[in-house]
Image 1 (cartoon, rainbow, N blue to C red):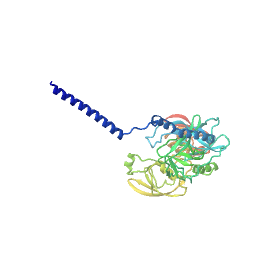
Image 2: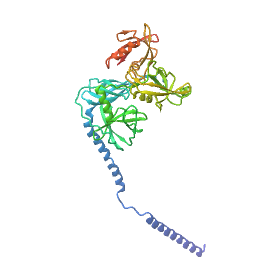
Image 3: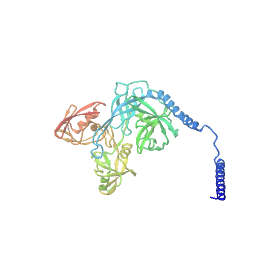
Image 4: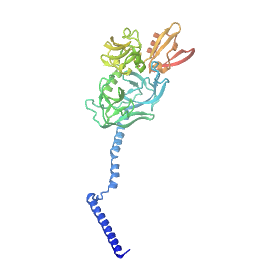
Length: 444
């Protein structure tokens, strides 16, 4: 290579190197102007500190709950109950084995010797946590599931009640009182939204909990200042808070021994399955499984009719239909919209008085439809779910040949003996079942 060519290469190399240096310097300067350096502000330390500081409100909430315990827990009792479940013979998809799951239910002391609680249907009290005495059920409101309990006497704590005229503003935290094996416990519950909803079982609007379901049914709700806000109950569409004033009105009525008359049409209904809907031509409603021939609808409603409306309002569920009827005072004229043999028709009936025998799966009654077997006793035709008979283990087809001191009892004798039995007592039932003789315990 000539000296001239070598010199040209060196110049081009130096020019290229200079160009690269200038380009890098220009890019660096542009970057400095476009993205100026952040001043050191302790970013690496302030973010964790901020997160730690955010825990302070939770510690304050825990402290509020701790202070609330001293005011609220003395008014609470915990009872252990057996929640009875049974199969409805007209609903084959329902679980066929009895369910005896112990539950711990809170009860609120309203008098020195009385407390109120929402008990599961057909529940029996086993014991009270922290006491050797067993509370007894004085009376129940079968429509709302509220029970008045006779409990060991202690001075009742004065409970302040939330004024329902003052909205329970949300979002906010409240405390729920729940039952455990060791006794009552309080924990926070966040209420993001509480819409007022109507439920036919209660005479005032309830506060919907949405889909939260964060506390079990029967839990009492307290504001953080110690006032009773209500109790969580089942409602159409999900759990809801029954306002404290409404709860106390029903409690006072139970404590006074005021009669809790509920309406009755003498009908037993079941859900409308797709197969039954196709057979009857009804798109919604409840189908009649039994119509008491001596009841208010015995002459104009028959088995297989679909009740799809009551007083112009649609019927969609067994519970909804039963609640509407139960809320009607005896003597009320009611119009039922039926589907019979593919044709729509309206019938009228006068609401009767519910006499304790369940006509819409009400808990607490004997719960039997019987037929006399002359000289032998009474044959069980129907066992209502969540009833005393269901809990005892009676089943359709059983022949009751002995009850208490009565042999070969007639249906009227069985009803009378159960009605006259004291609450909590046990009647011995002799039964013939498919050629075998067994003995069952029927608890009042």
